[in-house]
Length: 241
Image (cartoon, rainbow, N blue to C red; front, side, top):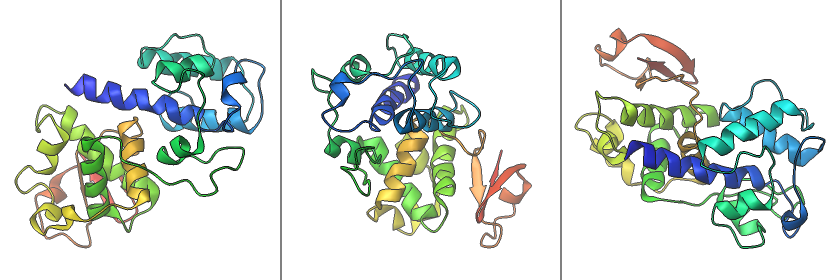
């Protein structure tokens, strides 16, 4: 179940890689070694964010970018040809001609390079995504975007740990795990930032480096949580193992 859920979430990530293309142009556009420009840079940023590539997004599609795309494709069960184009889009359930329109781009929270989406929004893609976004909004809506992704990542790290329930709902609703469940804040509607942050975590971004706990040292009276080893601090939260 864990592998299936993570696999499905990661497969959706390929859509985000393709969202940087202008609508109507994707069917004829392929990024490969030798390509350059803002579309390449957008792809590189996602690859770097999700851990497939290191360095900076320079907008030049060289061997390093090709190898990162291949790793991404292999991870998601795609043909690992190192190219980003219509075939990759079609393999992930897009229209037969591989076109990606502004509505899909907005749903993934990505602005198209052609300017069709001036301010990208976000949409819920699954029940797990909805619950994770609600948790992020309730627990971290005042934090930076990275801090919100980090909170979502902690939930997913718990799902992958033998010490916690193996589903997102099991982790979120585990007795005493999150104060927002006890006070009802978990029932609030998440905003677009929380929705995007939850999706980025589902797609593999973990700013915590595998942490299982987080807390605000200025707001908690829980002495046990302070015994955990802090690995990083992001905004008001300490993230620990």
